[in-house]
Length: 314
Ligand SMILES: C[S@@+](CC[C@H](N)C(=O)[O-])C[C@H]1O[C@@H](n2cnc3c(N)ncnc32)[C@H](O)[C@@H]1O
Image (tube, rainbow, N blue to C red; front, side):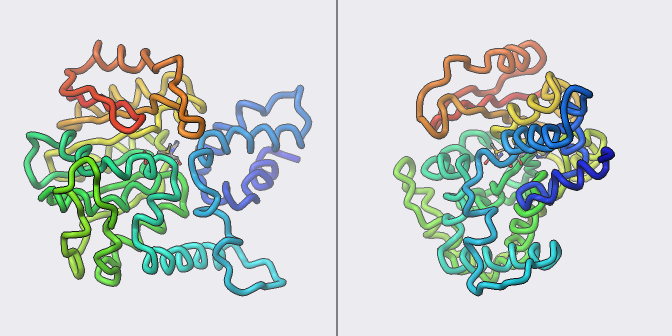
């Protein structure tokens, strides 16, 4: 098979079907070597893509079968599967609240009890009207209600490679008025009860938010997107560094060097213990903290819920 056929085969699997071509090609390039058979190239590329993109995601968000109410003998087309994907999950979110979906992704689930205090701390001292550019957003856009509960008027832009997440977040942003207020986080924050967003009435309010389906390796496009947002700007890069490094070593450094001058504040986070086994990592990503300290001004550096956040500016 030629390269294009192999890539088509790799992305036949639903979980990889809506990834940006750029990322799939970068993963494939690592195994496009004479010593591998075609089947090995396909398997090894899929294994790597799984580590980079879907390792943190509950199968419940991406798996089609969990949301099919009727059993069909025919395989749905890619397009209709895409529509079903959003439609079925939105029904579930409407029924169960946005916290239901935040619990389906390991990163957002871990952060759920701390969102209020987290956003308060990282946005401290900023104007109440602010642009947030969330790089490698996952489904973090569903936490938008926490900004509002703190009195922030946020223009939220989430950049994400998994097309299904992008569709879900965009549907959510556009149709806020159709969601009940419980959808904005019904959990009472044990840490800061004042940030219990279920007390806020968001019904009918329009979210200023947009999710963009794009690879973080498309640096010029990311910079253009950032440049179009109003200042002040805060960039989130939550738990995405490991994924970037798996496809290109030291790319996170290049990314930070290029985007930090365009932002008023950047927040990088990484897990300090295994999300599955709950054990502390022995290696603590010292290299990235050292790099940030050497090149930028640290504003804050703290740990919350198994995640370390480094806040800095140019
Ligand atoms: C561990 S998850 C974290 C999600 C979110 N930032 C959070 O903390 O809730 C990493 C996310 O980065 C996304 N990602 C990884 N590499 C990416 C790339 N090259 N371009 C865009 N998104 C990427 C993955 O799809 C995944 O949703």
